[in-house]
Length: 298
Length: 187
Image 1: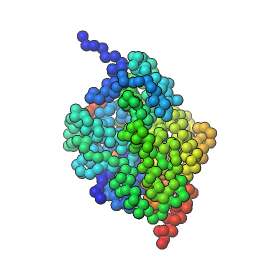
Image 2: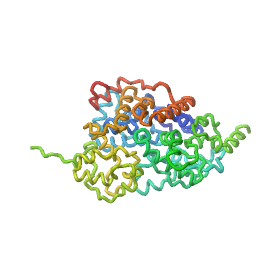
Image 3: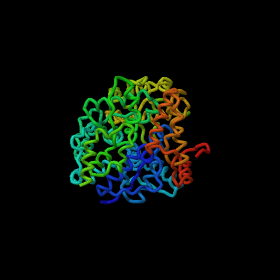
Image 4: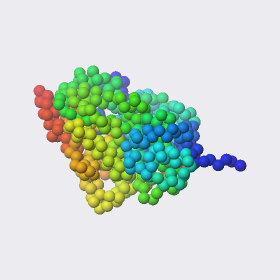
């Protein structure tokens, strides 16, 4: 397989270290080579759009230019980074005036961008490029009996997909099923975690988190699987506050899809960052961890 | 004499010049408001806000908390039958309010965004602890203690670096940003 340019994003160096580690481990196990983009910068998150849209585009454009130099597809594991990079590439392709302005700025750093390079989310690479068949073939310790809520959140799906197409995605369920887990029917799967409202409009964000946590309880999910650091951090770090903000809700661990897939691929849990959660996952994962140890010993 | 641009046209062109957002095409169908997961926390629903923009009610639009409650989840944008990017419209309104210094002083978001921008301009990367002062004290003493306990738990699990990371090409990076924005000598 052709290698990919890898854009970890700022969260994966901090609160989402487990995502970084498990993304690298699962990719290696699936034969996907990720080459970290040299000297990448912050994608601008959502805050930059409050100040200036052109500035937000140029931040992403620098990363796109660095990736275009490599000639490889750019892969981001963070849904927010993915959406920003993806949207900036589209803006640059559609608007020559914008591209000219951005390139004039990039010239100060000796760079040039066209927007033609592809931007992918890591889960898309696994599902589309590696393929579910190939993943199933590499599963050594299937997550049999584990009820998982597939939480897409917003930015991997919207605004790239609109209308019914956005509502009908199933790739997350498909991937979890390939790992041997049981994806639950999850009505909150495409709802919002609140994003940066957790800092700026706390009450609104907690209400959104309660919606997701409530849906997970209603469906008997033992774990929520995410593909975005912000979703994970909001759902896990602010879970105690969200559970208190209304009628009681049970605790539920929140793991990255790469951690669950990694377990199924037979990668030792420690190398996947399992054990660094604030809401412990070891109890619900116990049967999977036992099987994983047995396979490792065999 | 140049024609005065009315508020509706001004808002429609808040996105970069090549791609106006057609607020004039709004059907007032309310799909955006029905899809919005935070509508109940807004002074006005997205549909109402667009009606106010079209009626030229500038002061009422700027006084409304609606754009600040938007989480940018794009439920509205993905569903609008008239092709309005409602989420980007909300970003546009935030910029409008910040530029004209019309954002309510009690809001956290403008200060949060400014801090974020200064941090990225300086280092090229984001680092959460630099943002905390913009919201930390809003939860009172209990809120501060709770955030502190969480930070400690994250540090113990190796999930909170105590020092920001920086990109290598910082000077060239800042020169690049200076080409875009007059930053008052701060970049």
